[in-house]
Amino acid sequence: MSQSKFCMNCGNKLEMSDKFCPNCGFKVGKSEDFKIIHDKDFFLKYKLKIENLNKEYDVKVAKALKLVKKEFDPSKNSYKKFISIINNSNNVFYNNVEVAIDIIDLANEPSNRVKKELDNKIDNLNRIIDMLEKVTDELIIHISDSSQKKVKNLTKELDDLINSVKDY
Image (cartoon, rainbow, N blue to C red; front, side, top):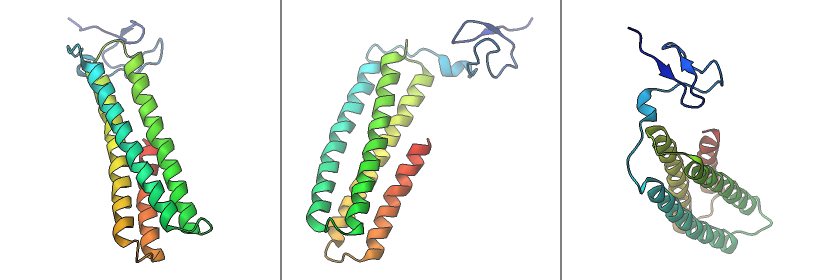
């Protein structure tokens, strides 16, 4: 007796070997991915996590901007590079926030797949916050030794992180 499965998007009957729905093109996942999570506060918990990370990020960005504006000459490349990195960081961070909120607002029910995507977005947000904090700490510690090599190393690390999250 063959086992039947159906597309989670359109309800079309699928073959067990299908990787995509032949009707709508939806990727067929493991049934484990689509298990419903029975937690009435599931979406609220994620929304609160995201709001808290957003507040934390705003504080750290304000601190970083204040430090860069205080310690670097706006006509110098190092100033422009840090401002550019902070702007890129903002774009990537707030894009991840927006996507996570969209997932929360648009998902019908909490499932393992939704949880996995939200966890990935939260991991991205935490990575950006951690790197921004690391760069800020390094700036504070080494501000008197404003060697170009250290500035380049700091900006490269943050650039690399932003690019890796952007690619995700």
